[in-house]
Image: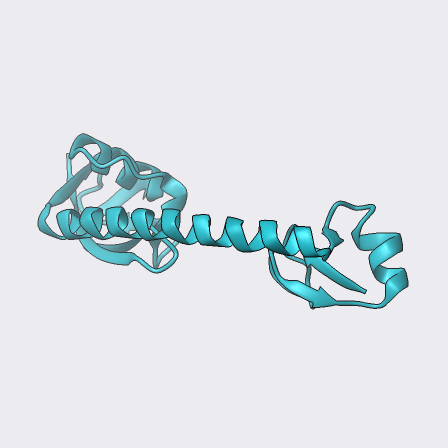
Length: 148
């Protein structure tokens, strides 16, 4: 049975893949669970058109992400935190504080897009983080944690 996947299916394929499966698996599980549709000629044409339009949108998003990435490399971010006399932070600095500091600089970045190597930063100093603007655009940037 030839089907088109509507979502990612483990060990089978990704969304919009055209795959061949056993009839029972497709008819009794994938199609009723709304994970797939039959790969009729009209469904294949619709899929091809959707992929063409999605590729155009993806190119625009990637270009915009590259512009944001270039701007992000030029800014300097400092985050204030309450510290002890030894330089240890009371609590920690995480992606939420980094996202707020970026927002103050004019960058709307979701905290889920920010990847910090350590789970939480607990010392004053310079640290690096990554921002994933797009699937293909990931930018490293430095920020500094200072004592308040």
